[in-house]
Image 1 (cartoon, rainbow over the protein chains, first blue to last red):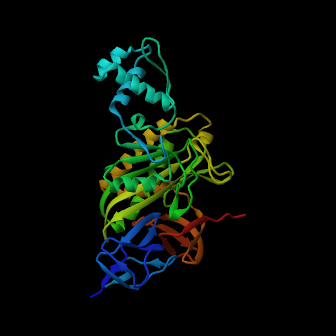
Image 2 (tube, each protein chain N blue to C red; image 1 turned 45 degrees about the vertical axis):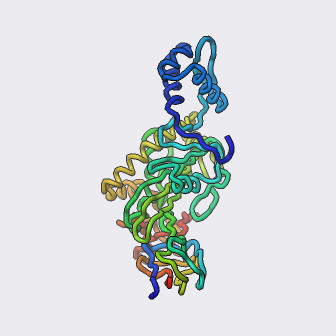
Image 3 (tube, each protein chain N blue to C red; image 1 turned 135 degrees about the vertical axis):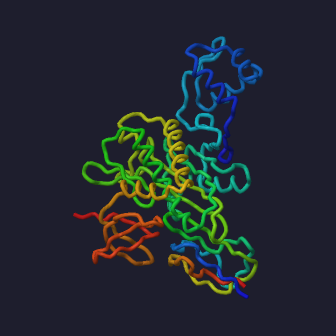
Length: 71
Length: 323
């Protein structure tokens, strides 16, 4: 069962720090978002593999939209 | 001081300077030692340390303070201060020190200069000696949705500090979200301050925020772009004094925010923000409009040419020069 990582805010995707297929641990930072000059790292909530990335650097993401699936 | 070593608040140094400053005369080593409850040789060590840092004393059968360098050492500002002579970035260091439990919430990391000072999205923040560079750790168990509002707090704090405590002829404006600009007589804008904020926590709740502020106090680093407090007051300004005032103002603004006074703060920004024609650039998209207010969630409201409004959360807000 994949864990969906959702964006907490409307933001610009400043940095994507993982690729699909990467193994991540709980707490590994997946992306860094930027909104209103606030930089917000989004961490993986679980141990697993990045199954799918929905965002790319320089793109945007809305509140509640998916960032990645971790399985 | 090495690059990575820092100074903390020291009660004895603070008291020692207090005693000397409250006396117009020479104070004997014995009096100081007695008041501090330390030996005379420990007093001498304090004096030597302060001399190394640039303080000057008259030393004849005691001590008299002749000169205080205008550097925000912790004992000049307050207890929750950590000071670096030179550092990559106060922002990165605050995070490291906080995560290593070397500093707590409400602590400020200050630096005399930064070698890799950063602005938003990894941009460089020019950091010559004489200006303010500091990052404060704020505890914030707040939903991420509200946390972006905290980004605006630095701007209001700098705005209030300058507006309340310094006499200036020029207009001072907050440029959304948190820069502070001085508007010159010919309408040109010059940047005096900028902020950067980082939120750390779990998915939906931020645990803590590191808010970094840079203010051009005595030096304007980039001709035609920046301006400094000294230039607009046309007087000597004390960096120590500025840091004390800014720290107090930020404490007040933070308390207001924590007490749920967001609406008042929002109005304050709206009443003092730079409004005008802007060009918004993000996601390889560009549009123009008039920056006209702040939305409830803290985003910038831009009125487009077709009279509709769009909320801006990120990206570059460029002032459109109409010639």
